[in-house]
Image (cartoon, rainbow, N blue to C red; front, side, top):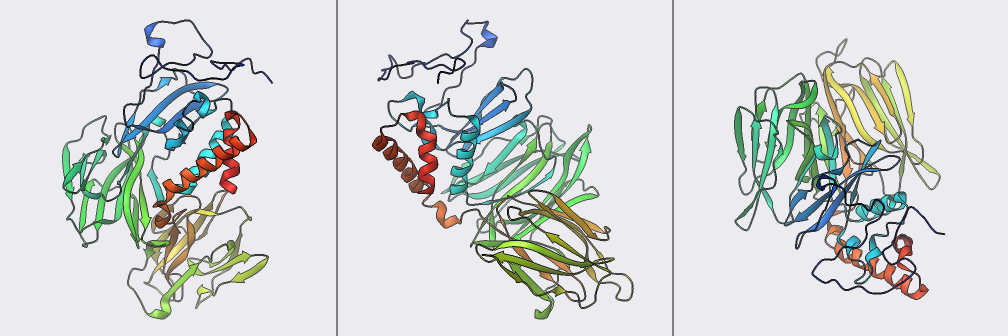
Length: 479
């Protein structure tokens, strides 16, 4: 069936084309008049650069495009083309190298006639195969335009040597990260800092030192949510900071059995939001805890981990003025398994049950830490807790008072809870896992090549045109 709104440079024919120079132009589709110079846009890949991301502002039509490339770990983002008006939503499509080099002679490799939703599904599948870290956050401003997104990721075999913080009395203006590999320093672009602060501070890390936690606070400036302070905790028990000024809205992210591999967030004139990339040392890592910090006796330690292929079906919460106990039920092949009851040497006033759908998963928790009252006074406990899933929010359960905590993470990463307990739930932390283990990342490129070759073979054997490329990759993914 013909699509009059689409065009092809060789419609109705097949063949090879040979550039007169190194690069040739194919098209253009749609508007054909030259327009004035300000209407002309162009993006070209520089030599050895890889197209990493396409940002599409769209609604009933395409409002704007923006392209991000990567070379030697540095990300470069083009101007935004179009978009004098804004669309209804912005989508970022992360690309692998083979998207632009599928075949040597076919310019239709991107398959622009493929429905946009199918490209998005494929993008999600491919990226899920190579993910090796967990995104934890964001704290502060939650979203912005594509020009406001920032990200820093440590390259393989690089170590974080320095963090440069431009800050004022009550705001973090910008962050810059310096990494080192074999004596060579790598300094990516600055995040934030369209405005400048009064003080520039540098956090220097020893060669055998790494960050194992960050703390900060959230404030407002010019009516915008911003990060007002930051501090960093290291493996050498050093507390570096705070930089900026702490507000009453604080956050804390400690982790264990995992390594920091980057930061990300939202920025403009200031650092508006921040999160961290962490990479588990093994399959599962611990993030937290919040509440009682001393190790306690062995009988006070509690832990619940999801077994492989099990689904968390229900959480039972015994609560009143605080959280007395937690109990977890999982399902596998129709069989229900229920954990021990953790805590609850005393009983609460109410028992609540949170039941999850088969396709529902926890993606965040929040709560408050306080000191117990009444007959057993003076103990640090979890006073309230809420659970957030990919479908809805449950809670709060208990009494919301004391110091708040919040922990959001990537969908697909939840693996369980742990903490300390006695008469009550005294502390809680979260087990998280990478979508794919770090060991699998080492062979990701080989697997992607296999995916490409399998799809190419399918098309060749079936004598199908390149317009079926997405279907071939979808099929190869499941083979």
